[in-house]
Image (cartoon, rainbow, N blue to C red; front, side):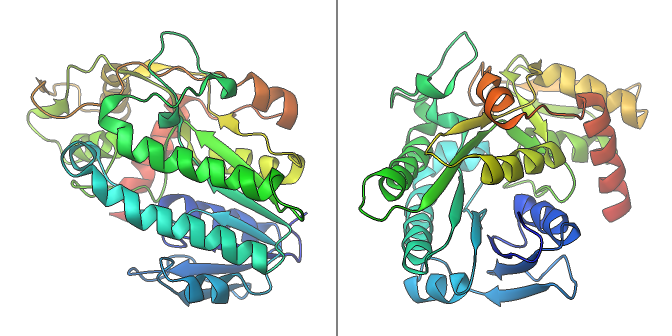
Length: 316
């Protein structure tokens, strides 16, 4: 599907974008990727970069020109503290980028467009959430960012089903991703990269935000890229789909894996319940991805964490 195709990856220096570009180049795609503030990470003869602010419609139109497929990986992201204290920073930039890119792709006659949504669009539950469990009620701390994702999903459905000449649009809802090229900056990193950095740098004590009992679903980035590519290949109707590993684990358990992997046996751990923590329990139903895409994550948490720690040590 992607060999010799023209593929646009927005957010070409971001966590998902960099890993997706590497895979697409290996598949023989002609890749165009957008940059904003940071410089390119991946280089090659089959990749062309465009520096663009995707909040501007004319930049979106220039980026999408000639593209067969678009992966919308660009996003304004942050960590738990920002989401809790200044949630509006997620709203306007992301809405502008998402809507402008959808419009530009449609006007350019793109064959298929993929939007990366989030599992925050689901309500709090004690059971694995399936794709139809969206109620438009969200975990309160995620209310604004969840509505941003959910609103974009609704607009994606409009382009796919509510107009005369629809555009094929895929929506994927991933578990919490981790792996190579993740964001390890303190202000914006998520839980696994933050813990990896604290373990590798031998923090004493290692501070964990919350009580460590939050139950989460994680997915290694290469497995998520597999899921995205399968969704783009196999989904023709508008079917939002969960991409997860089906291996729920607590933050405490993740930390114990990391300490074992990196040989930090005598680490002291401090749980700071005054710090922001997020959804206390998130289980994700992956049966639709298994049935419709033939998707199953192939990387265990142990192996994914080992690769991530090894990459962090080598890269930084």
